[in-house]
Image (cartoon, rainbow, N blue to C red):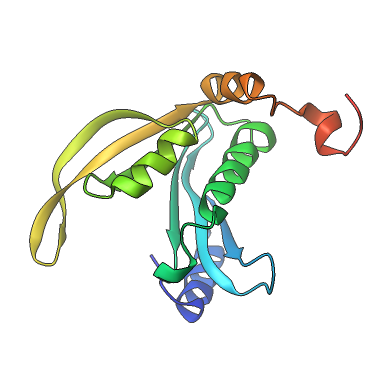
Length: 158
């Protein structure tokens, strides 16, 4: 995944021109529109109505501001309400406790672990597989009072 603004631009350009089956969004600072990261839906399977999600936030100093959490919420809203998906899945390093907590807060549930699925610093590491289903996400939003529906997104009472 890209780590700099230039890397992100190259990645997004390649994804758009390669006919990639996904949706790619840049995460920008709400104050000055500076690049902070990106969030993607990839491998969209229209038959199963599922996709993989990935998010990369840039510099460490830009974390813990709630922007990544907000981006995940917006991406899930897009996936379930706009695209009509049933399932969004992701993989995260089991050692990345901060990210796992963020995903759990967004409604993702643990489904399993892929042992020795990647290498970091020359060592094998495990990936947690997590997913959220449309019905789970909708129920959680309704319980939080966040189910705005079509009228709410249009800024109308309802």
